[in-house]
Length: 95
Image (cartoon, rainbow, N blue to C red; front, side, top):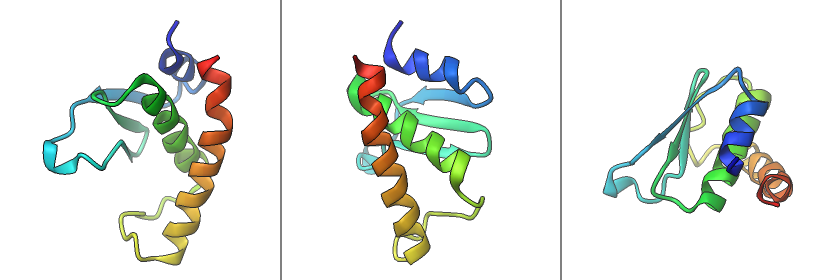
């Protein structure tokens, strides 16, 4: 079983969709909308795994506010926290 499938099994209440993002959104690795988590399928499996965890942290811990405003301090804190937890836990799925 590949790492992203293991994450899908563990977090079964979310629906993971692996899609190709448009070229102008090359910097975007994932996006969450309600219970749907969209992951860029053009990324490496390592990046997809980390992005899955990152988006799950947002789904589990954020207040439901729109985090698209990257100038907001609240968004910066949420992104830092999600990055920290995802990079810490990704090793478990990639081993």
